[in-house]
Structure formats: structure tokens, C-alpha cells
Image (cartoon, rainbow, N blue to C red; front, side):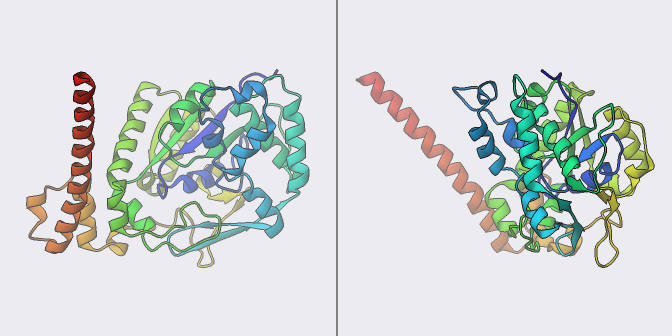
Length: 353
């Protein structure tokens, strides 16, 4: 059985710059990056209560999990001979991909079946190794295997499960202020297969309490990085774009790989990427709140995450906006109060009976 493999997880909320970091790691000679937002580690590390499907080497269950990831976007890319990603809410990047997906798929599953026990890091490593043997240009596997990179979806619990199940795994967690995330999600251009393609409104984000959840998850990631500094690191998108070399030198040190100039150039499959207008991920900060959100929307977000007090913005925002936000918050409070009261009454009934 093969020993534990080095695996790198890029995680964080949608629109926090995971694809920016992915593109910068792409060209490094010691790292393997797929041309899609794969989410493979997310589905492989999800718990399944009552059974150990990895120990059972359950191929059918593995296929079910991969179907919920971005793995089969590689099959789409092989037919389309390319992949499309969003540079911003308005601009699109497209790169060519020449891949024999059928051969790749049978190759890695055949190799995996010869393993005595399956592990998430081992599955990901076999997928990456087969990809580079079946794509053009192919990439030789060096004596020291390349560490596969997986891009996650920012689901709660994924990072902790990943660090537990992959002893040599490392996490790079991308962060961005909730206002900028909201700006990137509102009015987004619809792109087939893009995980962030659902255009939403600020009101919808507030109803789901999204800004506060983003802030809380980023705080938990920072706490995890302080507890496990050798296995988890937090990066800020704005700092990455504005001070790219300084940040990427820190990343190389954290990943224990030599610094290469390729870490400063956004790439896909080793080729520099640009939009039709000549823009790259590092040209500037895209989707800024000042350009895409109104003052009213920005203040509502700040109120939701607790950065503004209600009385300090009432005079600055349309009264209807404040009332709508208060209604959303009051509805959540009433729901919690009702559930608590029903549980209390049920307990009293059980005591009396």
C-alpha cells in the first residue's frame, strides 16, 4: 500500500479568490492542478455514518460522490476541447484542453483497484497522475510525485475532516470581506458549469444570513491556522493581488516547495491566462462593492455582520430597507422562540404524564 500523499486543499467561500490562487499554483513544477474547479476533496471527506466506504473499496459509492463534485467537468472539457472560468462578474476566461477522458478515467480507477486500502489523498493522487498521462501537452511525473491541488467549496467541516483524513494534507484558506463577496455574487454573468453562476440579490443573501456566515467561517479558519500553523494558512485576496510576490513566497515556504517565477503568473495547464480584453486575475481587484452595490446595500450588509449599529445608519438608509432587515431578523428570532417554547411545553407534558 502506498504511503500517505501530500495533498493541498484551496478552500474558502465562493468569490473569495480561490481560482486566483489556483491559477498561480498551476505553473509550479512540484504541484499538479486540474483545469476545473474540482471539489473532489469535499466529497471524498464527507462523513458517511454507519459504514466505512473507503475500507470497503466501494466503487459505486465513489462514483456517486464524484458525480457531486466537479470531476465530470473534465469529461465536458474533453468534448468542448476547453474550459470556461469567470474572471469577474462580467468577464470570462477560456482555455483549451485536449484530454482523452475515457482513457484517463479507466486508467486511474484500474490503478486504484490494485490498492489494498483507499484514502482520499490516494484517490486524488491517482486522478491527477492519470490526467497528466492522458492530456496534451502531457506532463512527465517526476521521481518526487507532484502534490495534487484540489479546490473546495468552503463547506463547514471540510477543512477539519480533510486534515484528519489526510495526515500530510495542507490547507490554503482564501478570505475576502463579506461586502466584496456580495458584490461578486450580485448580477453575476451566467456561465455553464460555474459553481457561482447563480445570480442573487443582496436581500436574498441577507435572508440566508450569508454575510455573517462568511465572517464566522473566516474567523474559524483563522483560529484553525493559529492552532495548526504547519498545516493551515489563511490568505487575503486583496493582499494576494496587491503584493503577489510577497504572498506567494510565503505560500511556497508554507507548502515546502522552492519558489519559482511561475508562481507570479496566472496560468492554466502551464499557459498564461487572459480575458479577451487582456485582463488577468492580477490586473486589479475585480467586483468591488463601490462599483456594484448601492450605499444602502453596503450598509445593510455591515449591519448584518455587526459592523454598524442600527441607530447610526437609520438616517442614512431608506427607512423601508431598515424595516425589511428588521423583519428578517425578527422572523428568525420568533422562529427560535417558538421552537424553544414548544420544546419546553413538550417536556412539561412528559413530566406530568
